Image (cartoon, rainbow, N blue to C red; front, side, top):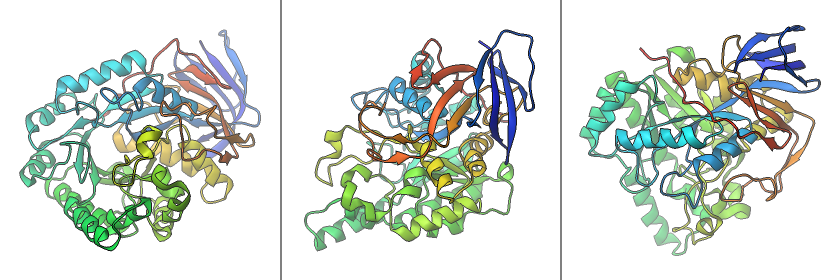
Length: 446
């Protein structure tokens, strides 16, 4: 179907203009002004609404295969679309972990069969799979990147062998995304904390997984990247100290080292453990308020390049275990854009900057083909939002398979009304059209 969105506020590339957008054969045919068309179209009245490029989330954990009691690609992609996220990049810590090209392509097959959003999947690294990792170079235009856990993680995903790290940073032609926390520091802090406090709880998490653990690991990753001129992207920055490692003196398209911040680290602080406990236990940890303030500063001055979620669902039973056994991670992808629009209302960030950090910059950072902008000829991945239609999160409208959210009871000032994926209205006013699936993302890489 073709669509004509009438009289809407189009937010794109630093500006907001009033006008129409014509969607034809899955792509953006024309943008701006009053558009007259000869073709049969479905018209949508965008009066009072804002049209944004769909958000692109560069870090999610959708748990399939092997952990589908928590989530799967179908359920979490559906939640993403309802929240205005039209494309995602998913991590390799499934069961089994994605340590081979065969396992990687199996995930792409699942995405093709079940995902309502566009998709890409990271290749995983272990201490002993360098041959498989380097084979990903052959498909660098069809895979978002290689993931390295340089810190505590699931199973054998921790890469702590210096020779392996040298080979990955020296041989990978794709973007390398890293989870940076120093395992030795974390273990030392855990033992010290147990000596002080035999029974731990969630408030101890940022003390155990502290600023030093993050900084030392991020610094080490950057040393490897500079040595080999690798394309490094450090995920979920959480500390003021790490910000000194990044620059805003170079245009994003020219950066070889980039950084991500996640919505929960912009929203919550260690003060929130008292009310939410293990529900906001995640790695790296949500830390003291001064770190959150520094993250906001780094986001607004462009030392932090993109906003993501690190969407990581667990069952409520897994979260309700005693602190040391409670699983780390929280579900966020349905509410990430709404959270940032809340801060637009609060005056903390402009809607143009939100679009930059959740759409444009992600597309630029990963060199995604023909997405992330409202440009003629690009795929029509678009979201209409009503900034004056409140939306309260409750168990009746949470779409995650795990069925809970750290935002339960929170009322956002805005709502997502329509989401287009590849020019098709997949979500409109609470109703889904599941007759089509998303597409595999492609990348512009030499």
